[in-house]
Image (cartoon, rainbow, N blue to C red; front, top):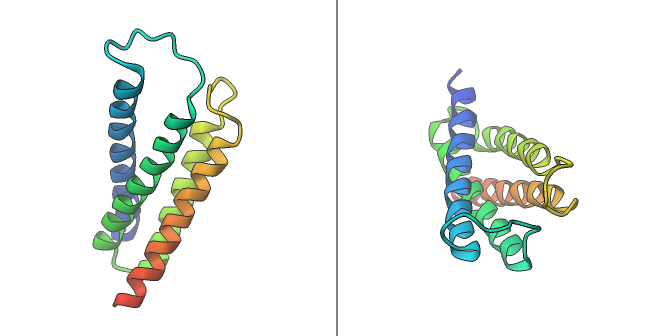
Length: 125
């Protein structure tokens, strides 16, 4: 049960960090007040969101490994799958203004970051 909680808390931490960063990015790049016309994201916004995905995944992975009782690779594997599914579902909506490839790219960034964390942290311990 604690391992499921670890994956859930890691996912929650990643979501909070990502969306807090996304709001700041939106305010900085699109301006205040939030009355902009919207439209597809610029290349700068895409790059910032991919960077946010790395940071959020790292923090979520850290939370997951601190709470989990199983081997870090097992907990991080479940965490990576959870984030990849979330990215594919979240950015894959047909009504989204993100490019079609963006959800797959975010999922790949999340899985790559989790894999790097698992490799680095298991070598340290």
